[in-house]
Image 1 (cartoon, rainbow, N blue to C red):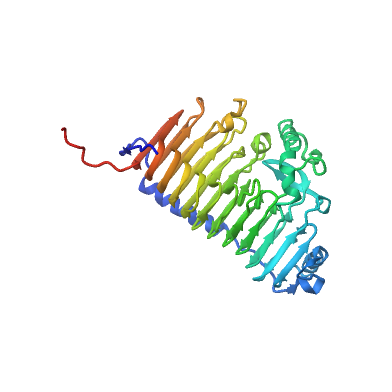
Image 2 (cartoon, rainbow, N blue to C red):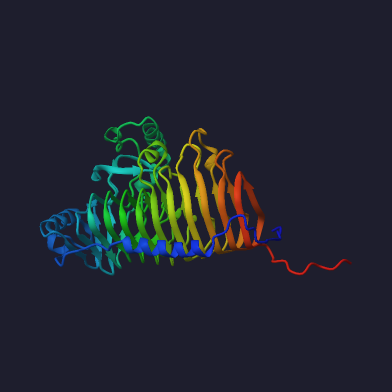
Length: 449
């Protein structure tokens, strides 16, 4: 591999000064203080009481439905799932004030018959519509949790996996409805459209906790938080390698903590989104106030913002994480000129990566798509104490749009041991560098021979 040697000194055009750092610390504290863990009543019941059997044969879907109804009558409670394999042919729909607790050795395996999953309000790649219910789903619920050392298995490698090549018709229709401002109630998909459901999704909800469970084999995105607030996602483990198996997707949501998560996904580990095109721009629901810390990344991309971010993304704080394995991209901010909206006030610090294709990639020209009518504004980005081993393509790409330049991006303590290509900046303003080394750090110049 060709070596590239680059060291960039301090530019004082734009810096994050001590007051701004203090404000960042205060902002993180305020975000964490605004997040409430769910309030669950003391009522506890085993799923076995309602006829479930962990024998890997019996359909336990009716038992989960009865357990949720019992908790509704009791104003909430904990549904305990003992050790065993529970087949569930259809979705588990949450009610408020419920903790679904999977004990160690418990495994919920969802069935693969689409007709078992009724249509519900959801979002598919940033467009609100009605589609097959996610396998665990809650709409307009408060104080809900999924906890314990058990496993949630979406069985996504079978029939659902065959839908990926067939989804184009439904995907394009959903985008046309978005652009044409078709009423959401008339965006009815399901049979014949092949839009795969998410594994876990909460919509228009608050005070949500997902903790410690293992998630595997999702048909589509794994955990999707949509139009919700006060979210804690921690200690989750992943083994999800189907197409589009994002680990965590945060969309139109705020006040979120993601910590101590062990990712192993075939797609984005964390993707922060805020709606596609007209849906997003008209929603007035940015994704904001998100704290990401102490996670282990492994998959396609580690930390992604976009490309569906039309309502805007603001106040994202990622710190003290590490990655393993080969990633296509480490940090990836992406949008195009159909989106509009903004990405701003993003602070990414103390992240250790191994080998990647591209280290940092920020683009306003994602996939070269876009009408040019709705460029996005990307600004106020800090990348501090970020390191990479080898980069097989490019260390830094910052690609703005001619009339909407990416601005105020600060690289401070950015180390890449080796890279095929160093840096591409286009349509940018006030991109600054301090202690940036790509290749071998240079010191005293060699003497003339």
